[in-house]
Image (cartoon, rainbow, N blue to C red; front, side, top):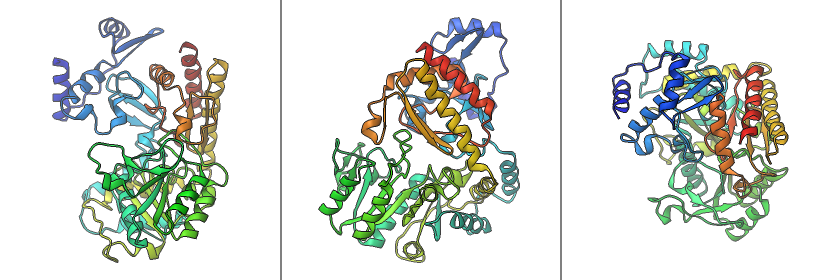
Length: 472
């Protein structure tokens, strides 16, 4: 407890707590004392003692010790890792352990962590101030870049998170159509707004029920759900609710139930049925935007929605979100129109700067070809390792987004994903941490690569995967 208090005090006072690497003999001694926090791997001792101390202190300060639930490692077990610094494709924790990172801050770090060019631009912007609460020219620059890149966006509104973007888009589609019902898909996450926190029915489309305490039934009564990749279920819902559905919301490639791409014809079917009924099609591209292609999943698949939500990459690692679409739809938003939405830090100069310089890097020739190459080699290497070691696995990738399941597959929806061996994934995740590889701490989260990942990173990761798969 004294260690936890000291760590908490260090953090509170702004003191750097990045440790000096301990001698091997000291690590070995510590590994015998801290049974739950240290594991001997060959001659090297992998210890997370400082992570444990800081996290135990955090649990007295924040619910579950974290500010976002997945960070608590509930899905995989073991000690959550407390990080100290990042650079390129690597991360260092407070115990001095180094990891190859495939989370990328959950997607934003597509050009690598702490990019020198982005950081230099941020320092110059910082000298002018962090937030104006008033218009700045940088908003125009990033807005024009987004509009030029994303096929569906003719006008854009910046906000501060993906959740906020989806909340704005939800109000927008209802205001524009005059309808209240929306349709979403099981396993697709659109932030924690009440209307989106819905548990779908088993196997068939159904009316939603609140999936979190505190969400009133009235908030979700207008939320319809269907299995992802089931066009017939969607058509049936439109038949049963003709002229009442404002919009269909979906992740064009699911990232919050693991990596699940659309089956051929599915996105086309959604585009067709929404047009026929006068409903809007909304692509939640918070994950896929600027990751599958410079113009996002809609460019990659050639399907243009009416409204798009963005986040993550367009802020270059700073808090950001955006929603945009056809001009006639967006002109409903205040102050151009009657639909109110506002934000104190929206369009702040730091987030705009990071986004501008990140997108400039992504515009360079060969960007998405490189992402496709390294990600393909990573996923194929892990699946080959699984086959060699006798594990049922399936997976895939598109450009810089990937995922794999401990299941025979194929995985086309959340029900398929839930057939995965999550206990085995938990053991695999912990084993990969010991080998210096940081994966998303849940079977039901997509992974991300970056332009900073090297062939050596991929080779080391695949070797580590085979080693871990042999021992679990």
